[in-house]
Length: 248
Image 1 (cartoon, rainbow, N blue to C red):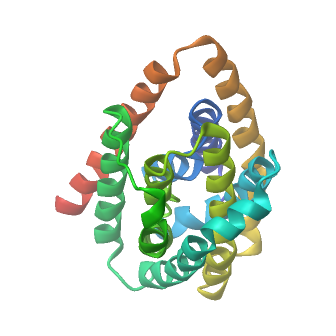
Image 2: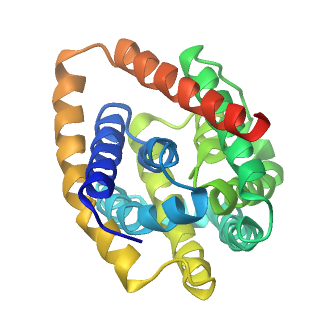
């Protein structure tokens, strides 16, 4: 991978935009970053670049609260299948036609964005949590490994459980951090996550945190609803382009 000026600018832009999204909305850094990165490059090149930012930003966010142990006890039946799904999805990423996987990513981006734009809310009674958690975890893990779109089903599921914002953010960060460990290990085994790509991902932390700082400032001054709709509208265009590339 040639680290030329255009490539460096793309990475900086992708992670700044992703950081702004996370700063305002509270999540979505991997999805926004991978959506922008796949405009000039393939998924197999883009996915390894987001591992370090996913690990570090979620480690930082998951420690902002005192609920780690209770959340781990509550959601371990979802987090374990998440890791298994991430491993399997990553293996499939290097087997399945990358164009088809790109179309899948486009579909995931569009569905997730529409759910957020129209504020679609599902409801899962707490009594049914034990039945839903493993399936949600496995599905989300598969999509994570295949497309790099970390946590869409998990975020929708946590909303459906009616978690308050602080619990939601800490639980999501905990799940995403623990998922990134087997996910990164599998990328190493596949030869995709190297010292070079990890270093690029580490360098991307600067624009990520800068973007988060900007996003938090925007969130304090601008309606989160207006900004979120703009972000997700932009993501829909990217998702549609990924599908178009697979069809044409």
